Length: 252
Image (cartoon, rainbow, N blue to C red; front, side, top):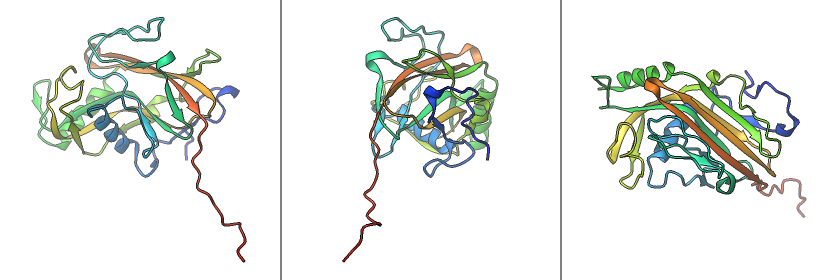
């Protein structure tokens, strides 16, 4: 088994950080299946409702749509460009209980059956999958870095992002009528139910040590001049959820 926790540096401040291996299931699902869940979150009525205690996982939205460079302003907010980027920094940081997994969408292509791409109609899963794959592998630079806010020293999140390439199975996608992004993305999508395929590079952080605040920055360059860059500050609060094991107690 390849250990994906090969970040390529020895930083005692990051000791304990764990990454789920993309070639194995994580909490009962593959990376590709989790990617489909993440897109349903993106197109839900509350796409930035990050934490659900029942799932124990946070789906960072990242950039949605097509756009150009978006600069991080001193106040911790992002200036909006033609795409819908994401930044949750400083006072807007995410506060997550310990043991919450974090899904990091470095780059991601989503297409649904019935979509058109460069003049071609995707009539079935094979055509849709081929388009999503092509749209991903023909992109440009990609990046994902992490730092402890207390140190200010940024490091690669993983040793090689290409190891984290994944494809979803064909999955059902529900686009909510109340979704704020459906009409603003490069190719608008109507509210309704679809079948789609997503392909991309994503990293599932399975554990972040508590009592610390981390900064994640990730994004990539895609086909047609696409550029995305997203920044999140994440504060991890001690809160282990363990059941009360009474096996060692004696009974009379």
